[in-house]
Image 1 (tube, rainbow, N blue to C red):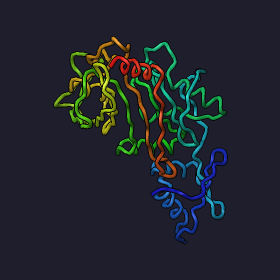
Image 2: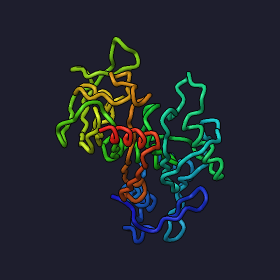
Image 3: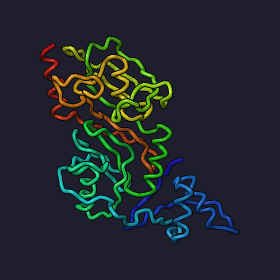
Image 4: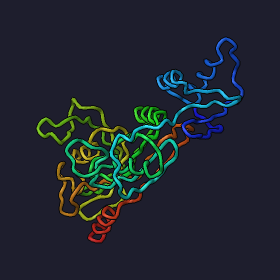
Length: 301
């Protein structure tokens, strides 16, 4: 179910009006909790913790739930330009530029997107933990989705696990892609001979990618890719596996003649809103470098 009624944030609290609820004279609170669980989709663990911490209050025909308690950012804020694609009290979607990691891995000297998002929250006077729902490779640009509270995080994590979050990419791949549309289905696992690589492997995890040809270029093709699964380096591995590595993707056999890193950009992100369930589609325009690569190869066709 999803909630389409009145919902107003009042500081740390969300105030909702559930309307007439069935009366349970023996346990009126159980009726409220059942409504929160079924209609507002509050996960059981969070619901139990809210109850223990006095985070659910009844006020006449209103229910107040403490969904927005202050939280530590988890990362040192770093001030840098940030392109916000979508934001409300529950979600944040920002553009990640190529060359920036989503979060620290322990050996980087440059700030990551997590540090910049922390600064964004600080600049708005919000004490919000930086929680990403999915990741992009360091040199892949595109939208990254963040949950702004635990309620949103739990619901979006579940949506991710049941494939209700759709990610669509565009890429410039080497060679001439002949088929206008096709599907690559091949399991992916770690490459035992190369610590940074993945590979198609019979013992790997199931992986599927849908591919559509958009434009034929000089010695290359522009394709749109939709992930059905979310394995590490999935697009890069699958396209290399079928003989069309991404332009610039040296790790998987691509040439750096025209581009110094993989020519891959997240074009759109679609997800159900944590509170309402309504579908939110966020589009991220092509970066300048990607546009220039396409123009250059088009002119040389």
